[in-house]
Length: 538
Image 1 (tube, helix red, strand yellow):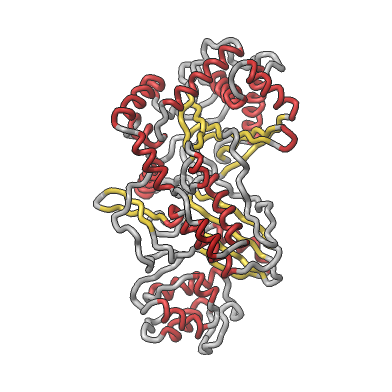
Image 2: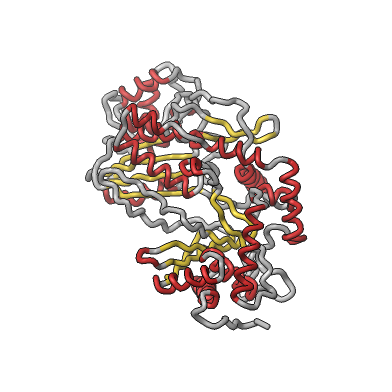
């Protein structure tokens, strides 16, 4: 363990480096990385110095790898003893804009309560971190990258949010814009994959900013990777695409004028305020009454028990698998024609097809699993550029038990979804009101979700010089509890249907069977095939 050399920053730096590098260091001109340091040992060195009270971060060490210069930076930023700082965690030294803060949104509050229950029970919850990894074919301007991210933080203050309990209630706190969660690490070219994997293992603390992190990994051959980590409590996938777009734009055209334009516009707090003001006590009571009638005693989430599937294990790692099937352009066109003839939309026909799969897969004597459909909570045009957790999902509850024809099915699902949108309540609030004892229970109860957002543009990718816009595929993807069905438009007018599921629960053959049944029912509703007959029907 290093000794406390608080009165001499250089002595403390050299002592920390000697310990983590396991070599004696006394030369103030030594370069940490040339002496054998890497991103892991750099984090250890920063941690040791933080324990001595120095406010520093990995970014400082990567910017000032020479001992004397790093020590001078420590002395310049803050006197020892004022607290550890920087993106690696600990007590941050930048000022907090609001000490008491604002209440979190309903979905944010549910996540915070899940984390609390997980800590008490020792049972895991999904990691809930969005990831983007890109290969870099030429060195990036690290200073320009930091400045462009800083502009994004100013434009989207939700990215500077963290959470604390104040007098027993959770609050959203906003950190000062001085915090810039951009770090640079160095790795040998043959160790790049290992460096990416180490970066992806970063765990966020919801009570400490930042919950958004960018790491530029530079290799000794001039290539590398850039990794974006963003906790879902701050944003949704649409928002992550906006972040990619704004970082790219800031890097390409970082001028005072472009900076001023980039920092204007509505923010997440504006959307939250509008949502809260629209749910007056009377409106909320009327909408909750509707949902109590529609959902009955089962409430919003009765589970995922389906005929032909194995029991879901009680404990999950939440590691994901995915299966995808394709719909040809011709078949997609027939679906569109059928939707027009039935006076509905392709979205509703595909939702109906999936609802029929669940209905016919239901266990005897029990209700079929509840289907949830995602929707985009960006009702105003000016909200299209707001970063925040704005996706939500609501129960889809059409009564198809007596809908024996295509026309009856189409009418039932269209009426049901119209009523759902007319009685829209944030899901977390709906669960809290209808199932107060289990809305934030661990282990999390599983869902069947249909993520089918027609008209949503593809998520923008990072566009920087030398960056390969093809994302690095991830082998450790995280699944939401249960089954998540997706559909996306494909090139040439076709579609893809996908199913994302828990690897601890199902085999790929189970997923392919479910997707094929979804295709079969879609074919019947589009008029191209006869009504499917499944084992156990009737």
